[in-house]
Image (cartoon, rainbow, N blue to C red):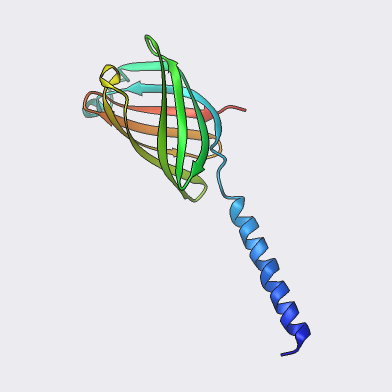
Length: 143
């Protein structure tokens, strides 16, 4: 194989790799930043019954991931102000990030919670449960 053919082949492989990496990075959802929405609790055994409690003032700030772990600070007011910073384990699936986590909010706020969620560029939704509560949250990305 001539020197020119080897150089052309190497250049082709490099350009092809850059194009593939560039195309893949466009699919990474931008989930960092400010979010706002609502959360509510409900009884899963009575799915048709309206939520027991809907608390509007929910905001969330998501910061950078390290090794698949993001940090989210949830803040709002539901009878009294609250603010929790939690770690969210996540993995990208298509154009979304799927999250899961366990956190202890203390005895005053329901104790240990497990939750799952999904976020894309525009929407962040989740389900949570503890020994006392079950509920959902729905957030949209602030512009």
